[in-house]
Amino acid sequence: MSNDNKDTFNMSDVDASLPAAAAALSAEDRADLVNALKNKLQSLAGQHSNVLETLSPIVRKRVEFLREIQSQHDELESKFREERRALEAKYQKLYEPIYAKRYEIVNGVKEVEEFADEVAINQEGDEATEEKGVPDFWLTAMKTNEVVGEEITERDEGALKFLKDIKWYRIDDPEGFKLEFYFDTNPYFKNSVLTKTYHMIDDDDPILEKTIGTEIEWYPGKCLTKKVLKKKPKKGLKNAKPITKIENCASFFNFFSSPNIPEEDDDLDDDAVEEIQDRMEQDYNIGTTIRDKIIPHAVSWFTGEAVDDDDLDVEEDDDDDDGDVDEDEDGNEDDDDEEEEEEDNDEGKRSRKKSSGGPKKSRGARTRESQQSERAPECKQQ
Image: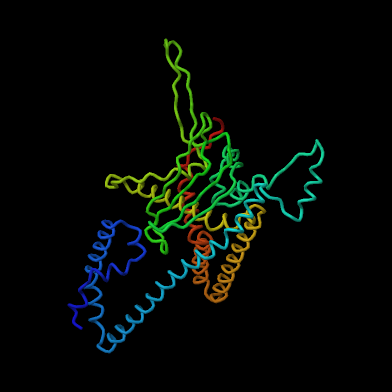
């Protein structure tokens, strides 16, 4: 095969290599994406050809064979992703009856059969106070989780006491997922369901495209995300009206306000772009934490057992790090200079490892630090 043939890219070949991303885009955007990748590949083709040209004929044939093996791997990987999605969908349906039972017990719809008679006896009499379900179940579960708990303010707790259930669904067109928060009738807002939807470019190697949140219909004077300040007019001014100013407040309910992404980013400086990226990263981190941790393991977060499990994982990581350091130090006892250098390197490794316990956790930690000074102050009163 000639090098000219190797450097020629077929549109259908590039198109076929992007099944997940292409499915999440419109026809026009999909064509633009494929064309952009095609041009990129063509610009790199010469480099790849140059590498192959440096190899001897026999080595080049081996590499060509390896590329065929790689293609076989990619086909299997594609099938794996399809089967994984089908398996997730299967077990999501199997989880539903369990979640339904949890909902009934938490909200007092049904009583645990084994204790129904005992509860009836305890609640007999005029002075008995009936306590249904598990009060503050979802509020406690979310506050116990570090990522979500940091978003909940003291003022939010009154509204979150009315949270009855949280569900999530995978969406296919476009790729992504949707969170649903079900609320009982409450004095804060009219909505019975608040949703947050995440649209992804590729759900297997996720790239967040945008988010869509419910617009909350606050009752007058009950908005938790803003506060109204009224300043008295200066003395001596006739018929002057009080000056009204609205300020943003730190609140969990800001989660339902999607980060604003300008359509044209030409005028944005690096700091503005980084701020938007941080906000979207933190927003995605909160959403996936609720989806992957809080919803399936809500009982463990309510009791605090999930926190103990997380702490155990961190301690095991620290023990592994310490073992690596001791091994390095023992291997350099005869050379003080090299030992000091190794200790410095190990100290850097320890700090890096501790700050990157997992991809999502580290992203959230970095984002929370970068947003510390930018987050709206907590409103003490309305």
